[in-house]
Length: 369
Ligand SMILES: NC(=O)c1ccc[n+]([C@@H]2O[C@H](COP(=O)([O-])OP(=O)(O)OC[C@H]3O[C@@H](n4cnc5c(N)ncnc54)[C@H](O)[C@@H]3O)[C@@H](O)[C@H]2O)c1
Image (cartoon, rainbow, N blue to C red; front, side, top):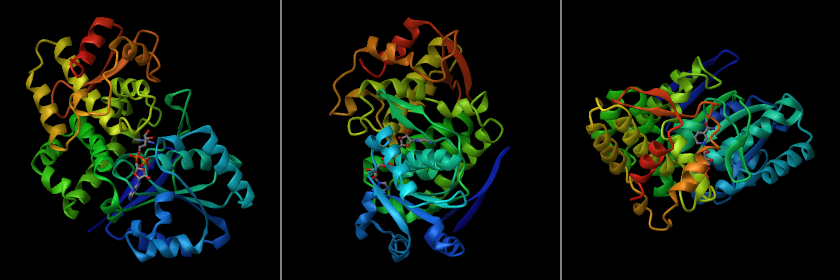
């Protein structure tokens, strides 16, 4: 099975290859470029050959200039960005050079940022290796790092030249990170595709067991939805905002726990955030059918994602007032209040601006009490 999607933006257009053997396509693509013009930035997990899905990755890694950097949230820092820029400068890369980011969402975001600013922009290739990066972060052009304990406070919009998705990478990903990525797909299905939501509901076992066909469909469909929402709205003025479903509550939880993914993965925060949002949708509009809440809980639970804070044993219960204050840091906030994405019905979403403290706190409390 093979798919080639085309990302079309007003300022960029690039292919996204999805298959069980995209590394071979990557190898052929790179062989057409001058070797000295290629620089790999790789998640340090892949220093260990046991994480290589095939010998092709070993060959690519051995063949080109490279650095390894750690995955995990700590790498999305100013310090890490400086180190990357230093290496790019040491390697004397020119503007026609290619940076190849091989890793999860963290590597993709920080390398994307470095590629976008070094010499005012180098060519970028994404090779996503985690669920989150395959079905979400490697397309859409957002790059970023965390600063002052705030999520993605610095960043750029910068598109890759190509994205190569090789599904075999997922076999070595730990289960918690695997599931955290699925939260981004569930979110997409809730905001815009009831049929996809039903697919996830019926096929959760196959996906959890990494059956290729269901994983292939999961990635392809998730990317198609993201392309649809970002194509006409690169800069989050309207439709792209829907993709932030669950994120306003979620980012506040992430900031509360010091954006340390060890305590709370980004996808887990999204799952909890979507549950808060489902309660908020019902509280705001009494006509909304309350089964929307049980539908949310059921689908996230099928992928072992948390629907209540108690389900993550390592977490100390947060103070709701602090969570409320942290919501004020949200980048989507406007002068009249916070913008929440709400879904009153599976497959549909809308943006609502809310400044009602009581409502925000009572929605948070649904996952805390
Ligand atoms: N740019 C965007 O549009 C966008 C969208 C969603 C999320 N994100 C960002 O993505 C990040 C989360 O992504 P993530 O979950 O991929 O985090 P990550 O990159 O830290 O990967 C999670 C863990 O899995 C390891 N790993 C990666 N691939 C592996 C593999 N094939 N086998 C074994 N281990 C592997 C990493 O080393 C890390 O320890 C967050 O920082 C979030 O803000 C960005």
